Length: 311
Image (cartoon, rainbow, N blue to C red):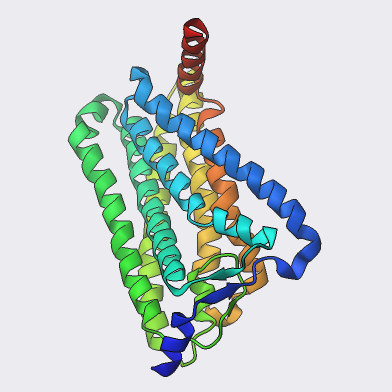
């Protein structure tokens, strides 16, 4: 148990991208711009969903939750990464590491469940259009959103607790934040039993939701093909296609990171994959959902015109 106290108690050095010194300035600029766009894009979606009555629908209710999740998720890692890249401080305390692990796991797990909820909402809209308002009533929307947050919280509590019970050797994390696969690499003892429990938790939170989403989209695809109007097909494919792109980006990178064995996990590759789902995906989500969306464009234009008049 001494090794456990020493390893966790003294904190860690985050190696980050110091192996690629020539990339650090470029990464700092790119990540700063991406983070600014993420903050602007997701905050805009949340604000529009609250201010425009046309966007007070289940779809935008869940989309505003996704935007809030993305804001929190990227903020849990990016400021630390920017400090790391600037060379000011590459260390993280024990408490900071546990908090970062817990928060990032909770937010990532919540997003897994929320994307299933959003797929169900699209299924109800496309496959049960006449009963949509009766199915997706306000109370159910709030219950589903709350269940998503609670599910993510429980999963994070389980996995963070299992991680903290492991004896760790070493203080250098070859990553830019405290992430599960990298911490597992520091385990001093055979962690087969604990890893098996974690793997089951990951399958429940990653694979099971992905299967549900794919199943819902099989039904959606069949329903869309039965629509005779080309305009109706385009609208359904546009709305559901954007959700499917988000799902593919998020689940693809998450499954790569969390469902491969510890021994085959590459820390260097893992860093760049983590950049994708902590920075790029949260930045792209607002664009993917709103670029072809007339309702959001209309709400934004209306808000801008109101601002000009008041100015």
